[in-house]
Image 1 (cartoon, helix red, strand yellow):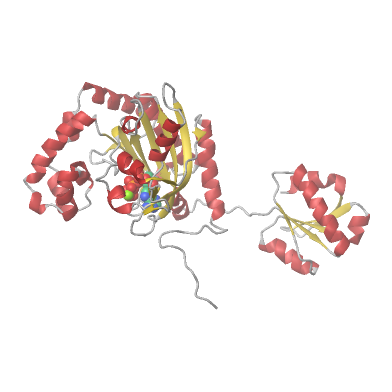
Image 2 (cartoon, helix red, strand yellow):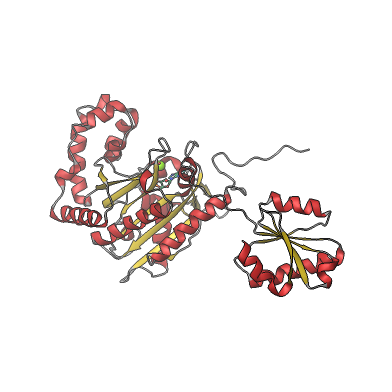
Length: 422
Ligand code: ATP
Ligand code: MG
């Protein structure tokens, strides 16, 4: 036997048993996005590296350390997408979806970051995201947050997540704040953690994000970004808060919330759970009014957020909220060659009549006992059994597997019978 080839570290398979949870979660996400009037957009998983470095920022963890970047056979520098927003903006610009119009979009799919794999943090992970272009007011910010709140409600997670909210102000306000923050940090330079010492000049706002205890103490006395806000920023933030209050969506203001990608301004938010340790952020987002222009379009206000699907599934599992749905409703069995053929034809007719019912055809013959244990194994509710007698009588024997009760049902009544008993 040759040596087995294993998967890449941090990249997971999704096998039966897990896939039904994912299906439920994605169904909820897709339906909810539809109920808010969002349309789907699909973009490639590979883009030119320059798209991400320009959109996300050269001095971010994602671009500096986490991207899967390679030269293809033509010598072009490409990267596996680490997030969905850059590709979405690129596609919308290329397809003329942004100029002078409003767009409300959703996407889902795998993202790739070369991080240290651990629970809730993988190298291939999946996001479901939404992006809105062309709207600048706090009403759409509240609408997006209401969308995410609706997801938690549908998934019964409302009591297990909390909303953290902040405003990053305008780029000008942030630049002024940056100067004052750097001046403050310089006084404590040698006491800061290593990462923060490096970041205080390249990307000082990220220092606010530091998990280091001593850096945290120092930051307690740091100047606050909000002190630099002008009337417009304040009005936007107050407007959003008023809407959230009116919607009954509670939040905590976290003035250290800066987010890891450079493109955000004004509103930023995260939904955080205490149930997943340090990988507790299940959804993050914010406004990115400068990005479309930065990528070559006209100035366009924009806002979006992304949900981490692995973390969402882990959270549902941790809280025991996963409903196991059996993959099969009806197992179709037969005895003998001719009945086997008839069973195959019958099940295909029934699938047309009852598209919502899940039928499995037992294949490969064998004794009835073996076929029944197959039905048990897949947790079917009913077994249809065809033998020579049933074929001759244009009927099927139907066994209700929970009670063992069985009866012969004419073929013309089968669909109605099945519908009633599953
Ligand atoms: P974190 O602070 O946990 O690293 P992030 O700020 O890098 O998250 P975003 O870029 O905002 O994350 O991505 C949105 C969501 O995608 C996160 O809130 C999280 O749920 C999920 N996510 C991000 N990186 C990973 C990863 N490596 N593995 C699994 N999920 C991830
Ligand atoms: Mg990260």
